[in-house]
Amino acid sequence: MSTNKKGQKAEPWGEGEPIGRDYPPIPLLEKIAYGVGVLPMNTSVNSIKKLSGPIFNITLGMHPFRVGNVLLAARIWDAITDPVM
Image 1 (cartoon, rainbow, N blue to C red):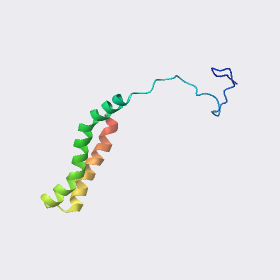
Image 2: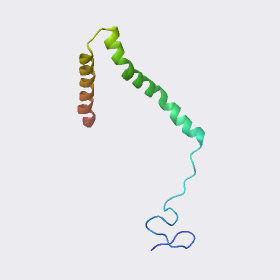
Image 3: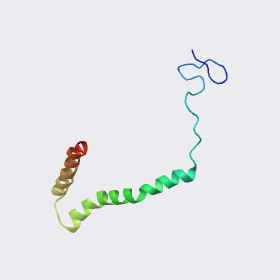
Image 4: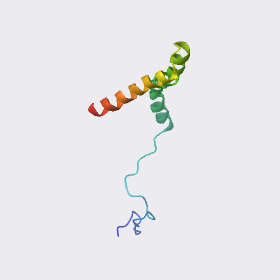
């Protein structure tokens, strides 16, 4: 069995100190900066997903079944083309 930094036995099931590098904690401001950077993309994608049903259904008067089929076709096309890319 190996030993940890204090010379104690490091048990394989986790009773010793964790094995690996000691990384400094990520500052809160940096976490917020990464989160804010994703907001524009998520806002645009989610607004299209959430508003497509009411716009097609209420505004354009399409039947909900057809709206679902159009959105399903887009998902199927995405599922086929993503692995190719």
